[in-house]
Image (cartoon, rainbow, N blue to C red):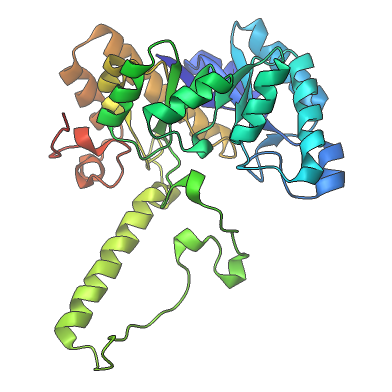
Length: 338
């Protein structure tokens, strides 16, 4: 399997390539786009983007000089009419830069690009929420050569897609970012911090009332508060365990490392590290961890690979919780799905 790593500058590439990355992806929001549309980006990240076509040209040249590929994200869920021509113009210039692929989140844009046939490979973004064989078939018909699966698919669902479409490249998440709901189905705006921030963080006050108007009894309130505490604990795991790291700098948080043997057996062609807006150190440690497990998977047994994946951080209790797992079927104590 290929290891796909996030970058925010050309200088990141040699560092991450030495650590074992096979491909890179980035965002691009050039100055002309910012002048016209403000902070509304051409992709799903407000930070961590390249700022100019000169940056992109340097990025592509650096990656190609090392025999690596570069994909550029245009994975907004949709583009309004006033942005449509500008997005297509941006993609034309991305293709002219020599970039290898564009990551597309809008099926309409994918269809338009499929008809235009730019010299770019087209990857369907996880934001498009491809959750079944039929959606993957549609993406392929529209021109996609790779589908990046959303975070919440089970291994059994991934196997079904891979087996049904063996010529379509499949990419799956392996480390870092989580999502409380489903990124591709989230159409809410993130509120400013003083107003609560992202809705998924639930930074607001609330109180409970019974529908029948009677006061809540103490046993009911205890169960409610226990449920709230469990929810808060899960949110902590989803948001990278408070964005904490080990003494060696290895990041905690959403992880699928111990599922690598099963992902490989299913036919997944590449695994993706999320978080191009994160620090280079965080991304580097993520690449190092993933490469170590990929190499063990290639040379050792599944048992050995899983053992390594769960031992890297030295925090077995985090793995044992099951809350940190992308693929909970292989988490400690979890039952595998057929």
